[in-house]
Image (cartoon, rainbow, N blue to C red; front, side):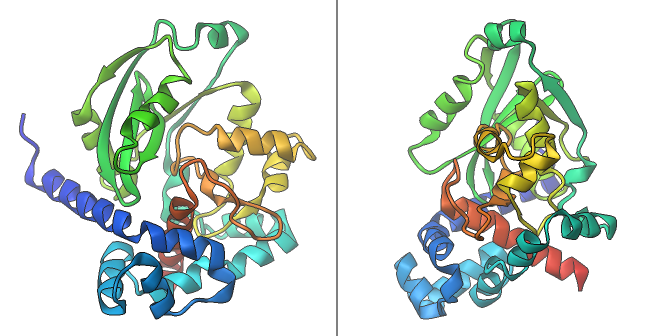
Length: 293
């Protein structure tokens, strides 16, 4: 059955954003390392290998705001306050409904903590459909279990096989079926807020699932430390274990592991690259500011 016009337009919009992201990736990675310095337009454009005029045009088309506005958002002035004041600020933000713009709290989350037997089977008896679709952060790799989305990865050009291998190793005994149509049907709901948000299935060890659930407490446009996430997961002080669980999160973006940063405000490492972490934090901060205005 052919896609309807609105769905085709949505995919075209995502495809344009994906292409623009690729052109912006070098600049975003550069910004992720230098946001404290508030670089100017010429410096950011040079990092992207573009003229200031061309950089401004492509960046604004991708982000929806100028590079200057985006840089101010990713500077994390609010993040430092979050980390200094702790959970009380986050709780106040949640009470005020500031997490609403992200729609993450509207997701249906199926908690699939694995038993020791499940872990040994490593997906045995399970059919997983996977496919590629455009996203605002480059090419996305979607993995769908019978009950919902259980994997969301990102790949730069030429890295699609590596992204699939990364997902496959989590559940190697599952039956994997290529289904790009299902991925393309899921992408607009996941990234453009079109229709009901996709149900998300969390499949992992119990502590990992607790950490992934804890990440949902961080409102869009905000960040929290690894120690905060560990405390919310019921293991205060286990920030290294929490960090490992955050790094193992299989549903990137929708389970917002990108919102966890070092206590000193550094973005630190990210499984899908610092450019994507900066891009996600910046676009969320811009959107949250616009909806709060």
